[in-house]
Length: 540
Image 1 (tube, rainbow, N blue to C red):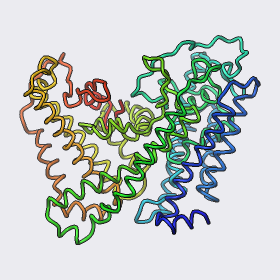
Image 2 (cartoon, rainbow, N blue to C red):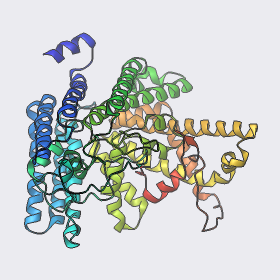
Image 3 (cartoon, rainbow, N blue to C red):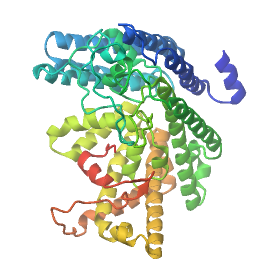
Image 4 (spheres, rainbow, N blue to C red):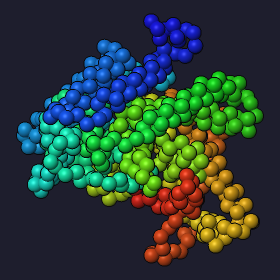
């Protein structure tokens, strides 16, 4: 009733308000957790207490958003856990994981099929798509845990075991903490997925529910491993569990304000640049350059809602304490471990590879670890990238626009990789330290950076059109209004294949000078060489 009244008063659709309120309600839940439970608890079952709080609040928040449709997430979570138990019982975790993968992606796809409309749907499939990746990754980590048992390594966390508290959760424990001094975790490296996320033993069902319904991430993410969740509730995530690092309140407030600004900007800009205007006859009748400019701004501001909701949701994760990311060189705690977007890097990116690294970070990292790298047996990185992008398109929904968008992403990145490599000899002098004091070189470098920024935004926004319009005919109509200029440019650039190849020494390390620039006070080096190695879903 309250949401209906607010919707009538503000003109904002009720489903959108429900998403916003679900994200905002996570803040007081996280605040209470921070005050009451984010501290040493001198009880044997301290992790179980924290997990129970997360389970109860997460289920309540999920019911607020989904209502009776919460049954879908409960079914998939329960079936996933039972299949993992079954696989462990028959000593065939690979078979169980295959069933879990098929079950979750099929359940989600059928949900899309039966609920899809011509617009982006805000319903139970919104939370289900987040849960789908979480459960698949969860099962794969459990499958990989067999190697821990065979090698007789310590199962899972060294200080934890099933249904037992972590030694670090109890300040009176005699077990010495491995981490006793602040350590530096790179700013660009999220903590969502460590190098080793294997699970030797099956977590309890209640822990699985807590992981699935964590109040700060069940709705729109971010994605993270079960291992991080267990470290969070057992306090082994912190170097010194008896002293929680400070600074989370300030960082959470920053996320809240920045997210609110971006959502406000989206709400205002959408009134001036509505994306559906791209499929009107009035738009088609406008001059060519006006249509290009409108398309650029319409798709540009369509990004702001993602930046806004991800940043807003990050604040609740920060406030809970799960996003702790070590210490910087000054000894100050960093809380950006679960950041799903790097605003500065995204806004000022000079290549599509930087966009991939800065946008939807944790989902990209999940795709890299659980899909792309597991396709290494194919022996073809391009094929692995194509399959990964196809999976992401299916995961997003059944609309043709997703497949159009992700197919363009692959080809755009491939074109960018080819031309950055070909133009490297001409752009390298602009970034040579020896030339940085020369006024002309400085001017040319700035012009080159601007050209790279503008070029990648044009390519990105053009590819984003079907992602926002969703339907095949809408996408073609919008592209047709600008005479498929983006496709024409792409085809012309792809003629690079018929040009003579530049001779290179095998020992030469290829550096993409477009990315060898200083952003955020750091030198961004060889980003696209990494794309060449890891495929289109590379995350820095």
